[in-house]
Image 1 (cartoon, helix red, strand yellow):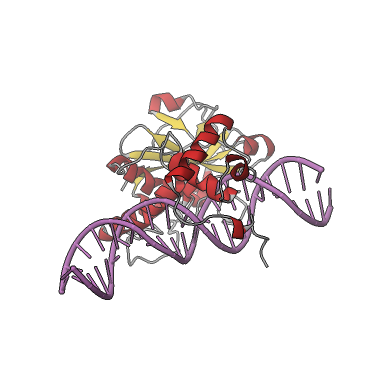
Image 2 (cartoon, chains in turn blue, orange, brown; image 1 turned 120 degrees about the vertical axis):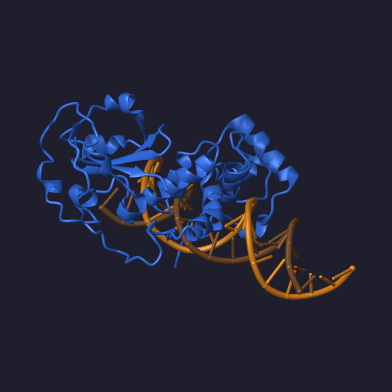
Length: 264
DNA sequence: AACGGCTGCAACCGCGATGAC
DNA sequence: CGTCATCGCGGTTGCAGCCGT
């Protein structure tokens, strides 16, 4: 079962890194750059396996790491991203400059989980503790699915104030970015985003982004080019209390539905 | 001072994804 | 196309330090 070990374990050190090992690793990477983790330990004169070197560099030694406490803004961003991406720590970390996936994962498990629980929120589902889980109460909002292919070109507006809905009530547990709308979730975009059905036409970058102070992140080029599918894209907002998620049909170049999510 | 439980974090492990051959 | 090597991710573990008794 399983694969063979990544290195000769009997000849490698394990456990905490010494200062000297750190210095060797830093020195080597400064000279030769990152990569080739397999051969790095030998070349750098380290009795470590490549995986261990990579982890040490990425999680601790990289010069661009921002050590220290998380800010409230980072907390909120992590919570929002987790509600959308789930335990995709590397994806979350990609949106927090200077933070690593491991750091965020640890922080989530030690601080944020507790914080959410104390607020009466289930950290996994982001719904109120004790609420019925698993069902996407959707609403038979009839209007939601009907008009997704009207092309109201270059229009991007929130329909009403009521379209701003609490995050924990609405976000399905497992929206994965890039998830095929016909794929594992089996949810159409309208089912995923039943509350609002904003019609918008986009170019990339979507021109209204500037007007609305949104900027796109996590665009998936290969999906854009290769497949007709709906992708769920997260927009990180410069507005303090809102982020936006929408379903986008890359082939037809318009979004199918859209919704706004408040932060917690 | 000694002990034990708890906490936070660094590091490890297993496995899926990806690319080279 | 299949196999193998490597990378990268997420879950888990181990341990040092803290705190209460």
